[in-house]
Structure formats: structure tokens, C-alpha cells
Image (cartoon, rainbow, N blue to C red; front, top):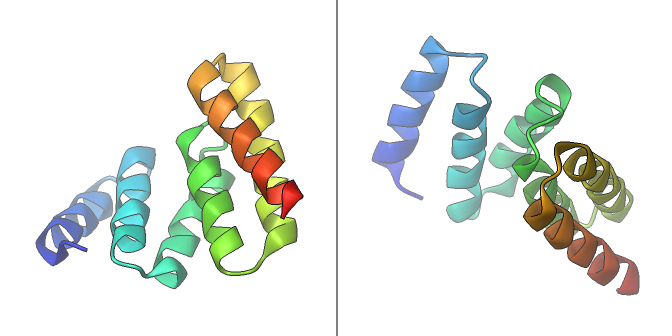
Length: 106
């Protein structure tokens, strides 16, 4: 995790609290630093406030899997699949379908 980048992202997010990308970037920064617990509320807030932000669902589902929250993982992938279909995002749809298939096989 790049502490300086995280600090800058937090400052920017404080100025633009409705910016989905900044919340996503902060969550990703925490994940890259191995801190899923700090990333989790950012991803969950994104799903709540910006449910059409497709990229969130794969990362949140993976995070839930790492935390052993498999029901939430599968539900997140399912929701993401629907959002990706609605958005016409074939890449995200493919990634979410693959993640869901792998998660249900475990």
C-alpha cells in the first residue's frame, strides 16, 4: 500500500464524497496493502450508494471470499452479474461469471 497515494485519495474523497471512483480507489489501495477490513466498508458503501459501479462487485466478492463470508461472496457475484448485464459490460460479466463458477465449485 502506498501511504502517500492513500493520503491523497482520502483528501480528494473528503472534497468529493459522492465520487464513486475515489471510494473505489481507496478500497483498492487498502486491498493492495493487505488490509481487507479497511477496504470492506468502502466497497460496501459503493454497492449501496453507486450500485451501477460494476467494478466493485468482483473485488467485493473476492474480499468476502478471503474473509470466509461465502454467502455474501456469492450474493455479491450474482448482483454484479445482473449489473454487468444491464450495463452491457461483457468483460465484467465474463469475470463475474467465472468468479461465481469458481466460488460455487469450492
